[in-house]
Length: 335
Ligand SMILES: *Cc1c(COP(=O)(O)O)cnc(C)c1O
Image 1 (cartoon, rainbow, N blue to C red):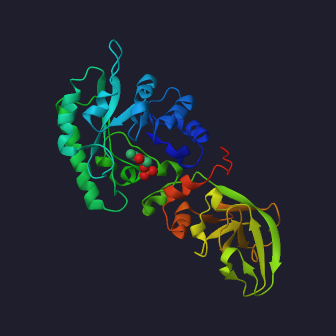
Image 2 (cartoon, protein in one colour):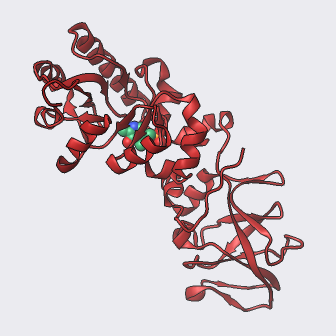
Image 3 (cartoon, helix red, strand yellow):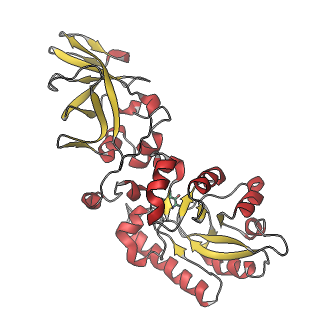
């Protein structure tokens, strides 16, 4: 199951779905609007909606045949198809520790039993979520075991007619042997491993680039950007670059040692990130000129800036860097 919520983690939904559709059975999204967009792009694939569907959206979900995750009897009953219609497939969400959606694990069998008596609904899958698969191994193993026992019991009683799923990317990579038979992969699909020791097995999908718009030579003692947090201590060639925090190049990257690639050289970001522009030290970058490409994320000339590096420097996580890349950044699919 390819998780393509949030514009395919900022990669561009249309590009990602087209690239992935041939290799996956399911798509997963956060909400109805995203489900409708995926349906247009890949009409043949089932679409799971990960978050609770809002009450006024439920009838549309039934009509379109999207698969909701349900947390309670009342919620599930709302999805019941009308008389003479095939039952709506729903997946039972079980809260085994995430504390976000789902029925408590001890109530799962009871809920599934109750739903087996509801005409218009069929429990076609059961899912849970790892809150800590990239941080707590012991906890995650215990959670996977609990989910496996629960799934076995539900199946033994004939209450679930379809796949069990609990693994996000960290679950797929670290716990695949005990994590159900359907994997909800997000971050890993885009080439970033939530477990750094496995990063070498994945290839990043995205290159994020901007351009040099201006190059100037600064003498000693010149200040750079808002707040004048950086002042040159030696003659410095400074490039102005066409990206800013409005594009998702986060303001928290200011003064934190962030670097970009110009002509294959690592170049320091100087002073604060502004809304539309950053300034970069290109003294060592040879022939940087207006129009030169600047790699913000990706490889060039044997150097690489990873989303992990960008996230660390910004004090956040790769998921937030990807999904924060703004609509002003044009997405291009490249084979
Ligand atoms: C976003 C999400 C995923 C994907 O998580 P990754 O860590 O990006 O693989 C899986 N399951 C649920 C319920 C999610 O919300």
